[in-house]
Amino acid sequence: MHGDADLFVSKKHAYPNRMDYEKNSVKTSDSYDLIFYDNANGKNDLTGTYYLGVYSYQYSTYSIVANVERVNSEGKVVSYLGLNPDEGK
Image (tube, rainbow, N blue to C red; front, side):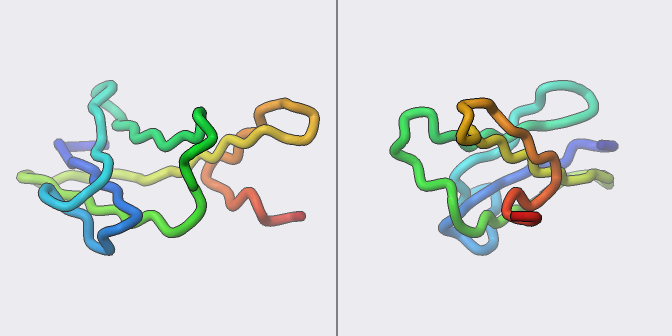
């Protein structure tokens, strides 16, 4: 990432922005931001469409990567970096 882009995510708002969003990025280093959704308590429905909005006050370049982790039938965490976990079933 170059610049200071801010990422906003929502499942409710088709065009998330600085005012309408559910989660926004947390600057974790000079090279990337992170947003986490989890179902640790078993009450969150993580299925559906996630809308992303990226805003910056200056010229910025960035890449977006989605990482999905699921527990398989053996109880092991399986990670799908940037892939659709339903493909190949």
